[in-house]
Image (cartoon, one colour):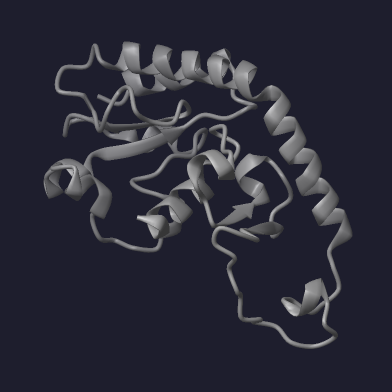
Length: 204
């Protein structure tokens, strides 16, 4: 269970309010690009007590970071990540409401398509993401030159196997082929959503 919490919270940073004490997290990895920080920068939270975690160094050398990770720090990246985290916290309520409304608009319009299905819970999910199964006669290739979307998560983009998550949710292999994940973010606009919906309407 603790391993699952570790992975889940890593993905949620910047998209949900995460308090390590309230959730009971003992170790948590953060990637700055998940909340609009610089790519290639991250942080690691380690509990100091109850329980105290004892780490084994992976990079030895000059004894930096109390001997846990030697090497010169990327100061601009660290500062950028800190500022991105500050902005994510300050903008959370405003942006989560705005983006949730955009996603709701998209889903409401697309549900007029006969046979379209939203995969997963429509309540217990992130506010910015939608996974949809389209009817087999829909060809979404027209969207590729303007929008980025995928069959699955970015970390499994190199695999041709059906999404194990959708399979676990009971979606058939055939329907998984016609299922796509759409994510909205801070810089998406209502005009872009309208363009997206118009393009999908022409994909049948």
